[in-house]
Length: 372
Ligand SMILES: Cc1cc2nc3c(=O)[nH]c(=O)nc-3n(C[C@H](O)[C@H](O)[C@H](O)COP(=O)(O)OP(=O)(O)OC[C@H]3O[C@@H](n4cnc5c(N)ncnc54)[C@H](O)[C@@H]3O)c2cc1C
Image 1: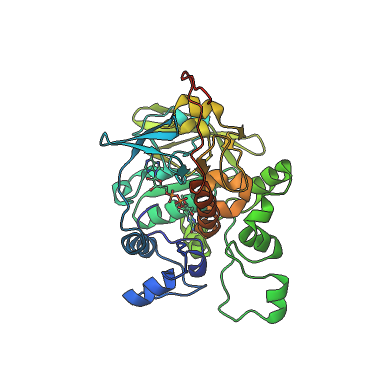
Image 2: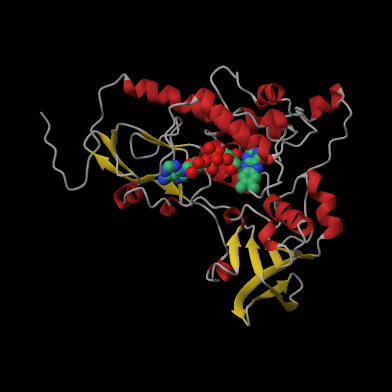
């Protein structure tokens, strides 16, 4: 996320889950004297990251900051190799890798050299773009955040999006919501409304919907939209090339040339020093290359995402998925911090149950096991 960004989710929906709901964002802000509101006051990225670090120090001091280089099956579970060479044997693995491995760049842009194209997730500072000609591609919150911040930092920025119009969250009115409005559109961690209420508060029930319906809902719910606080900054200050698809791009004479096709079929070329692809994330199990090829080929998948049990366990026993990779099973809430509470409690219950049983022998390819 770029420096200076604000979270789209409200304060009350940006808590990190702990068993007793003790260390909420509100508690953290009051301890540090930071302005906080359940709604109406956007959460600054810096506040959220400081809260995350404070949460880790207080609630999970045993965390080891290391990368898992590989995971393979072992006779009674898994063998993990860490980036410092350490090896760990374990019966269960919970993959909470978030969006880290799933940056998505459309094929038409993917082959551009890194000097001319970067995914929004690859950048943090806006300063290096001051005075440069930057095209931001995308129509969601990453795109609108980047466009506003780059424009304010003195870049010459344009925003290209396939949508004919950009969407933004509605600005809070600051007035208390009437009982009638609250009954019609209850406030939830995913925004107001009864559907959102179901998705936010009942991921365990969402799991029992037919698979095709779950996939459809996840695809269509909470599509690209910017935060309300960025609307005017984008609409007033950033040239918008809406309804345009970047069909191809190439580097010539130290510029990246982008060929755009509009919805009415008209074509044009634009040039820039750099493209920021704010084109989102797509879960794809094949991207998790630290999982052995054997595990990846055994995992049951739908649309390249893991098929999970009601306890977040994949088809490979003892391997669990939470976060965005679990969205097709438990719904859109898994894409947000608000979904972590359900995931943590659900997986913990399953792990406690599994640890009270004798270890399950996980068949290892190439190793013959004999039964007594
Ligand atoms: C621009 C942007 C804005 C967002 N705004 C919001 C918002 O306002 N509200 C909201 O709720 N959500 C928001 N989200 C979604 C947000 O990503 C999730 O809510 C949240 O980060 C999910 O947490 P997570 O723990 O599942 O994953 P992440 O926060 O992505 O954490 C995954 C962790 O796994 C680690 N990891 C990955 N692979 C390995 C490995 N092999 N070994 C060791 N560690 C590994 C990573 O280093 C990382 O620390 C936003 C996302 C983006 C991109």
